[in-house]
Image (tube, rainbow, N blue to C red; front, top):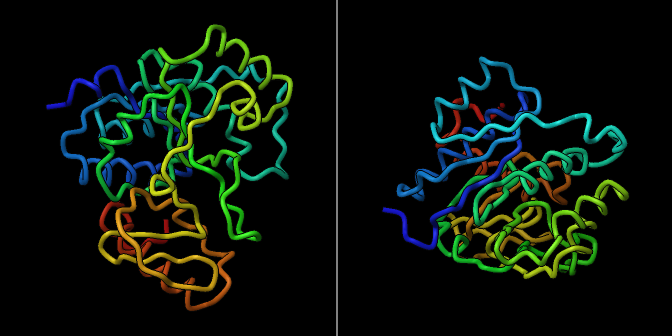
Length: 258
């Protein structure tokens, strides 16, 4: 039974044909660690065919599908020099603009869930995010990471969505527009780990810079395939080993090569 504070809540994801395997792994890991979960998942379908939609619906039935209005973004140019997460910002904006629930939690689709999300659903600020980690400085800065965003609609200031739309259409930078529109409430760092920080309850591993340390109570592994920038072969191999273990558990592809 879902607690009352989770009523009128949903998750939000952006799914393309290429990352359907990541979508499956995310949902399966979510249900494995949160067997109570039956909330709606809003999915922005970027390039999915009817067969693709059938495939993802088989994984989870309670999906609310959104087909993005490309005309709306006609003056937002796709810059292929930008990181992929920036290229897909406009699709995340569709989730913010359209969610009909009181709360939405938007995740990157290359996420593996490692624990309960109940505390995250209790977050009540208008907008919450984790701080961005800067590898070169080995620190977190007051800028939002793209990995996880939480929005609570009844906490929005008057005209917030209209203001966000104006800023986003002008700047084409959703993260910047969000920080200019909302007072960000920072989520605990345990809710967001990027490709430079890996934690798991089973392995109790934390990889940071050149060190492998031990920690507890992580929630996510993000950027499942972001291994190329690791500074040493040992760390790459250690992260690969842990990633593949979780990938085999939740993916259709036991080789981990998808």
